[in-house]
Amino acid sequence: MPKADNVMKKLKNLMGSTQLAVLATDHSGEPYASLVAFAFSENIREILFATSKATRKFSYLKDNNRVSLLVDNRSNSIEDFQNAMAVTVLGTASLIEEDERHNYLKLYLDRLPHLSEFVASPDCALILVKVTSYYLVENFQNVMEFDFQS
Image (tube, rainbow, N blue to C red; front, side, top):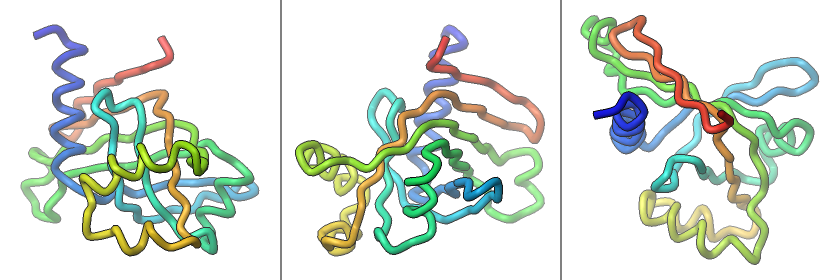
């Protein structure tokens, strides 16, 4: 299997194994991290998450749309130093507008049906992250990059 296909397969497996990611945003040069439930497109170029419009993360995204997400499969055990995988995702975030919301909402709720009431709220924003790069780490120090910009 070519290296790019192997990395893509690992990314899909890792992202499919968990529903939560840590979102990192920036506010006036200060980092801010939030836990978000996420879904992703089949080609993994898009990641979705929902948030209340009253949150800091939503406010910070309006000021600076560059984001990072961390997805991992750790179990908080000593074995994680050899077995855990983590991926850092870089991309740009934007609010999904009403005319596109239905298609993206289906993708989100197919993965996270227990959040249907939350995303139905008029105060809920559905955010689309267009991925530029993935950095996959396994075996504690083996790093693989998958870049959509090249």
